[in-house]
Image 1 (cartoon, helix red, strand yellow):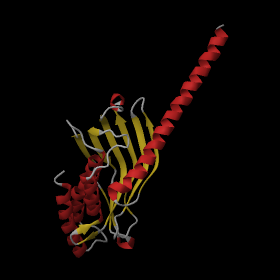
Image 2 (image 1 turned 90 degrees about the vertical axis):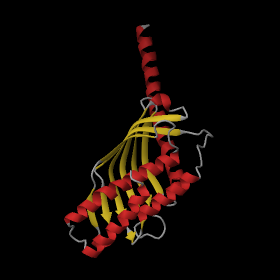
Image 3 (image 1 turned 90 degrees about the horizontal axis):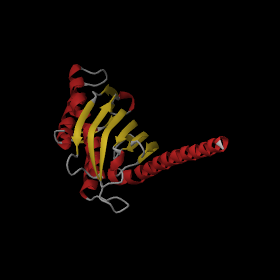
Image 4 (image 1 turned 60 degrees about the vertical axis):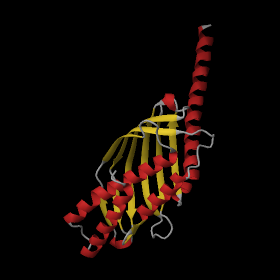
Length: 240
């Protein structure tokens, strides 16, 4: 009898483990498909996510290899690449209309910054996402889902100023924001805009100080032009 119970217990454990793996796989696959389908509508450029993992049981997940293409009219194919995004969600809120996220950590973001006097590729991305925010598509299920993020952090960021052999790469300082969307929460579109504005605010705050120190490969005229474009960007991020 004990042997039979052990066999039954082993089979049940195996089934549970298999079900757990399937749930994580399908959740990750669903997230990847959703990002790749909805991203271009928000940015009006290409958006690709390489892989995603998420466990609804503990609310932890990770997105790997998120690349956002440049808007039309800019040279480089991509405006930014995010190596990994770690997410910690309160599991009990996953099926509610107000999802609470304990923490989002964006690790190793890499941006390419192009500018023309009073315009820039990152500025155009913010404008595109802002337009999508003004006409939200809503959740495919018909629910109006909002998000609250207790902590959002960017680490080990880099920005490449310009394209080609004259491009200059600078490190960005780590940046953290707390209690985003507290109260009523923010929509998917608003969350995307918030994250993009925060990433760009990292550029606005970190790069001018580095340029003041003097950067090899960046002439005085180029530096002046960059600083002017950063003022325009600063207005777009709205004092974040």
